[in-house]
Structure formats: structure tokens, C-alpha cells
Image (cartoon, rainbow, N blue to C red; front, side, top):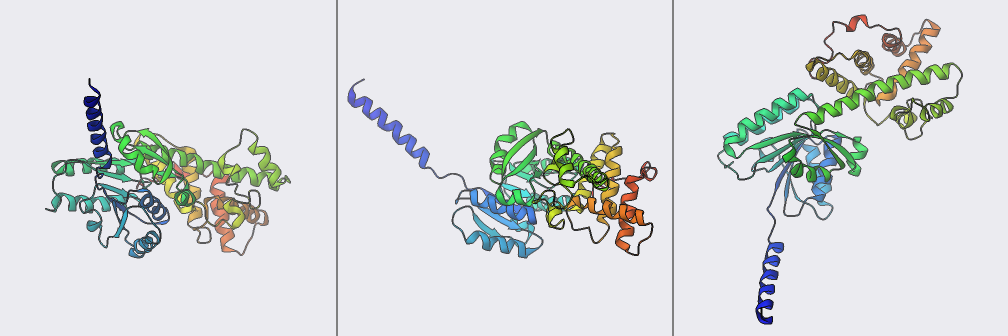
Length: 387
């Protein structure tokens, strides 16, 4: 090949590469639905890491949450173009990716019923070459999630198709704000490469747990362990303290021994043992006891669906349900069970108390400490899917 022909050939290749690299990428339309404490921060991180050529619509039944987030976003540079949607149908208009973060199964069902009704019947929603993607980050029961996934697939097939995956997360509001969440993804393997980069814009790790619904099973299994651990650590700490052992010494022993766990080492329920734990700030912040009660309900419902009895889980669920029903404790971190058990022990020691909160605490703690299992045997714990 002559020098001139070689040069022309090389130049043509370079031009083709340049044309490819400078071609504008396809515009993606995102919708983020559910802007509570977690969703607000997740949407904020997602928007900041999307391309400026993308669009993100924000929707919450509390319109002020979407408006506040829009203001926060516009005070900084970069990221996708935000838009506040006043109606759910507006949020999902010509959408490519929908992310939902909702409180309970009934909310997930209701939201997706409206979304699918709009997408399936609106003439502007033309058949598409690329399938729509729905990522649900809500913590709900796997059966509800699988049902929604099936309806999404059936309803949208005539208009180009749609895929629904579950991606519950761990890390709390702190992790959502810092963008360090861990997502437990339930999705068919071919979808992982499309979903993972989106989740990584809101978190640090994505754990593919298996087919659709598996992410929720893994999340509920983890929270089942956490809920039981928290109660056992509270009982152990109370036993040791009332026997005269210094609480920090006792925690040190547990944390270097076989009893070591997150509920003792990081979120110790005794005030003053771990300065950064909710217990050391009046049980404020952290993971609310009502949320733990909900997750225990969901775990028991999931176990029932596969024919598994959770005797320890049911006892723990009963304790959380009773304590969450006491107004003083209902909005506090789930480690407040220690305080309830402590007051219950004091009330039992004195035999009489004029404090209604102590009476309630004694009843709540008594069901656990005295092995009141009889009422659980035929109960329908969590059968309603946490609703």
C-alpha cells in the first residue's frame, strides 16, 4: 500500500470514529415516584448523576415534596433536567425508566394500576423499540411484587413491552443522602446490565439476588435477623446490667465474642454505650419501630407463602406490634425495645405503678419474657402483607 493510500485509509477510520464519539446519545426520560425521606435523597442523587440530555420528572402525593426537591436541584449545576409532575399520569408520559419508592403493598399496586392504565390507553404512548423499565425500591411482600411484574409484562406487550424489577435497599436515610445504599436486585440476568448503572447512581453496591422477587426475599430475610437480634441484645444487656455488670464492659464482651452483631456493636440499645447510636440521643432518628414492625409482618407473610413457620420471628413481631402501639415509643428507633423492657422490669419489681406508660411497657415486655406463645399459635401474623 502506498503512503498516500495508507494515509487516506487511516484518515477515513479516524473520521468515522470521531463521528461516532460525537453523536448525541439518546435522550432518556425518567420518572421518580415517591419522595419520602428515602426517595427524596435517592432522586436527588440520581438527577445529579444523569446526563444533562436526560429528563427526570418528580412526583409525590405530597406535591410540596416534589416542589422542594425541584428547588434544591435547580440551585446546583449539572445533571438531568428536572420537572415537577402534578399528576401521576404526567410523570410517566413517554417515559423510559420509572423508579418507585412507596410505603406499602397497597400503594405499589395502586400506583402501577394508574401507570399501566395510562400507558396502555393513551394514544400518545406509541409502540416503542426499547422496552420500558420499572424499578421498584419499595419494601413490600414478594407476592405483591411478582403480581405487579406479571401485570406490567402483560399490559405493555402490545406497545413495546415493559420490565418490572424489585430493588429494595439497605442503608437508611444516611445512606440515601450519602449515595452509599446497597440495593438487593431481583431481576432476570439479561436485565442486570441495564438496571445496575441506574441503581449505582443512587448507591454504592448492587447485589443481584436472582429472578424478580428475590431482592425482596433477601431484604426481608436480613431484616428478620435484625429484628430478632435487637430484642435478644436488649434482653441480654438488661440481664447483665440488673446483675451489676457495667453496660460498656458487657457490650465489649459481646462484641469480641460469638454474640457480636450489628444490633450490639453499632446500634446498641442501651443509652451511652455507643455514642452514635439512636439510644444515646433519646432513640431519635434511626430505623423507626413502626417500620420494623412492618418488615416483620412482611417476613412472616413471605414465610407463610412458602410454608415456613417462624416461631422466633412471630414472638418478635408480637413485641414490635405491641410497642409500636404505645404512643410514647411509636416514632422512635426500634432499639427502644430495651427501654420498654427496662421499664417493664422496674414495674414488675415494684408490683404497682401509677404510670400508664409503665403498665403498657410491662404488658409489652411480659409477652416476650414470660413465653406467652399460646396466643400466637393460631394467629394470622402479617397475613395481610403489612397493609
